[in-house]
Length: 310
Figure 1 (cartoon, rainbow, N blue to C red):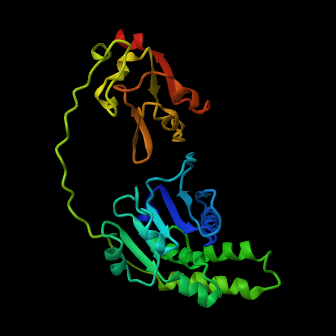
Figure 2 (figure 1 turned 90 degrees about the vertical axis):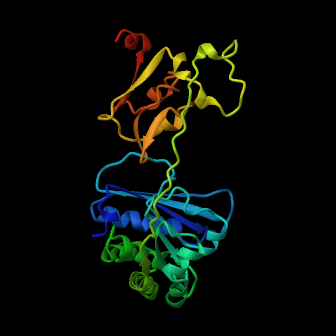
Figure 3 (figure 1 turned 30 degrees about the vertical axis):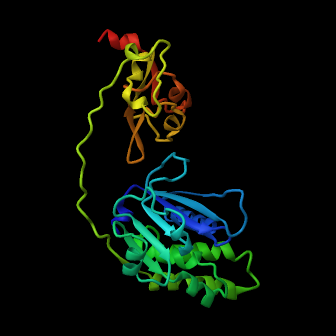
């Protein structure tokens, strides 16, 4: 089993153009994962543009329940359906170190690593467009890329993807079984023809951490005005607080709603999960507690005076 498949929550981001089937592929992948007993999520992100415009689709796969519904900004895997997007869109933004980049291209993985500066990542390439033109008679490369994904990650099996593809197409193409056969052939060819290369790991150069001298509210101008722009980190705005949110990690379902609504970016995340509160900058507005799911209630507001007594 791939090391990727051993992690609890895997986040996948698809980069494509509208009309290339990324939304459909993400949906098939989620259905296949569900069929294998996993928890899965699939959703697209479209702008107002029409066919041919850049778009994204997302998957989350896990062996355990999860409750996040936000877009994916730090994926484990990026799948690039249209390689021309590599020239204009930063498809690897937020990609975890040693993550996967699966690209529809005729270039070898080694060539792709150099051409698109992908050396920090594992790179897999397959000429999905050529496979689609030969099997499906049109350039819709989503199905071969699903096969390639199954091969390099081990997160779902080829057999399950084949079964789900048939289930999805048989109603629409019941009188055209050759279409179903063509899609199965494209899926299998993507699985068999993908090749990949490991990341080229470099030792990071770590800068010395800067020391920040926090200022309290007594050092501000009259009226509490912060005159300089982009200096909020320099002020200990937590000293304004009358109440503070208390976080219980055992109750947290990681929906990230508290992080989404916090006006002070005071919710601390590590690896995409809430781990605590930055009390130096939390003003105690209580929005996080209001948004916390009532069944979980991992965030409760407590009077600051209670902590002053301790």
